[in-house]
Length: 41
Image (cartoon, rainbow, N blue to C red; front, side, top):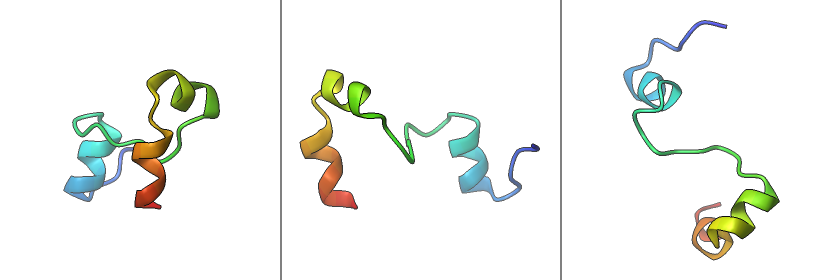
């Protein structure tokens, strides 16, 4: 799979932006992130 051409998507793809589209439950629990993440969805 090649990297997307859209510059925003490309930045996310390359890891330049700290965005995750999915976070597994174990990671969310470890980070205590559930309460921070849920309101955005």
